[in-house]
Amino acid sequence: MKASRRFPALLLAAGLIGGGVALAVDDPAEMLPNPAQEKRAEAIGAHLRCLVCQNESIEDSSAPLARDLRKVVREQVSAGKSDQQIMDWMTERYGEFIRLAPQFSWSTALLWLMPALALVAGLVIAWRATKRRTVVTPAPLTDDERARLDALSGRE
Amino acid sequence: MNATRRGILTAVPIIGAGVLGVGFWRMLSDMRSGAFDPRAIKNPNVGKPIPSFAMPGLPGLGDGFTDAELRAQHRPVLVNFFASWCIPCVAEMPGLRAISRNMPIWGIAYEDKPENAAGFVQRDGSPYARVASDRHGRVAIDWGVTGVPESFLVAPGGRIIWHGSAALDPQIYEAEIRPRLAGL
Image (cartoon, chains in turn blue, red):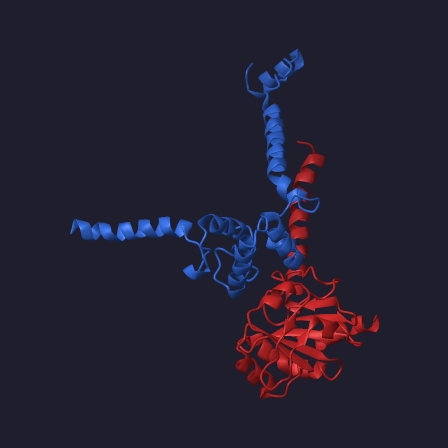
C-alpha cells in the first residue's frame, strides 16, 4: 500500500529531474560518438534559437529545422571548427536573431543595461522618498495665532 | 504638493496610457493588414549574392539547377521554396501561376519526397519554369530559409534583392515585387 502510494510521487520526481536535463536529441543516433565533442555541440546548440518555435534552443526543439541545424553543428564540431566559427556560420545565414542571447552592441545596449538602470532609478526614487519624509518642525506659533487657536477650540 | 506637481502626476499616466494605446492599436491594425508580422525573421541574405548549390530535379520535371545557372539569367527570377506537405504552399499555387505569367519562377522542393513534390507541382499545372529538389533542406539553410513557403527575388547576376515569407499572391507581387523589377 505504502509502496504503491509512493510510486506516483517517485515518477513525478523522476519526471521533474529528467525534464530539467532532457535534451531534444530525438534520436540517439544524432549524438556524436565522442562525449566531449557531443557536450560541446550541445553547449553551442543551447545558444542557438530554433527559428520555428522562436523561444526554444535547437537542442530543446523537435522541429525539423532544429534537427537539421543540430546536425550542422555536430558536423562542424567533428570537423574541428571553433565555437566562434560555428556561431558566425549561423549568423551569416540567419542573422543575429539566431543567437538566444544577443551580443552587446549599440542596438542592444539598452536591453543589457536595463537591470542596472532600473536598480539605479529605484535607488534614486527610494532616496528621494526617504529624504522628503524627514519631519520639518514648524515654527512656534505667534501670540496672534495662539489667540486664534484658543478662540477656535473654544478655550477662553 | 503644488499645482504643477499635481498636474504632472495626473498627466504622465494619462499620456503614457494614450501613447501605449496608440502603439498597440497601430501594431494590431498592421498585423491585420499584414504589414507587421511579430514572428517575421529578417533574412540577412537580402542584398547579398546567392549561395552556391547544385540540386537534382524532380522526376519528369527536368534536371534541377545550380547557382551558376541562376546567376547566368538575364532576367530577374523569383525563387520559391515549397513542399507538398505545406498547406500555405497549396494555397499559394494559384497566386504563383498568376505571377508566372509576368516573370519566371524557379521552384525548390524543401524536405520533400521527390515523387510527392513532382505530383504536387503537376496537379493543377506547374507555375515553375524550373524545379529542383532540396531533399534534406541543406540548400535552404544556406539561403536562411526557416520554413515554407519562402520566396526570394534574384536579380540578374545572382544578387538577392527581396525576401518574403508569406504565401505569394498577385497583391504581394504588385506591392512588393513589381516595384523592385523597375529598378533593374
